[in-house]
Length: 279
Image (cartoon, rainbow, N blue to C red; front, side):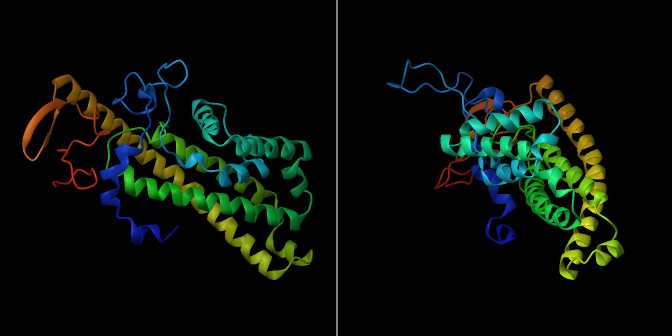
């Protein structure tokens, strides 16, 4: 994932981000207030779809279910959104991921791992892989989107400043719980655990502690930023301040911020690939 920083410039991402939003206004795309109707398909009623989302992936949700991380998600609207994304996977993948969640619960995978220092150590290393992925995803989101856009919803329609941090916080809490249950380093040595395994687990302990502290402080700051953005957006809407849209200097219409370009108050111009650069 680190190679992405060198191959995809954060400043360029917003030039095509609008095109991967869905067709459901409540899930983030006001360009389709009535959804989309496909001629000749079914009864031709409007359809509403979420946009592209990393939650459509199967590997991380599979790991969440196997390690019983999913069971620790809070029962709130954000978790409902996470489960709603499952509808967008192929049927076979959806059924397999659901079966893993059910069987992991029946087998008590997490409880079994906690019974032995070695199995708990291996469980910790696996959970840490999930934490690392979600942490990298969160860092991408901050740099590519949040710092450069005032629009509050992700392409999949989830509240961007709450959804990803909740998922990362849940993993960190599970990791912290497991690390707390693990015996101290000297005890692990006396119990005959491999030195390399002990060192890896200790590194996980440190990352878990740091990640939890940093995330809590970080979310306090982003909460303030989010409130300021909402206030500014409400003020602009109240004053009737709009964004001029046009091509090559010609004014076509005026729209309020966020109505057409996902919150980016900028002049849109069509480039060679439909970007907002002049062409």
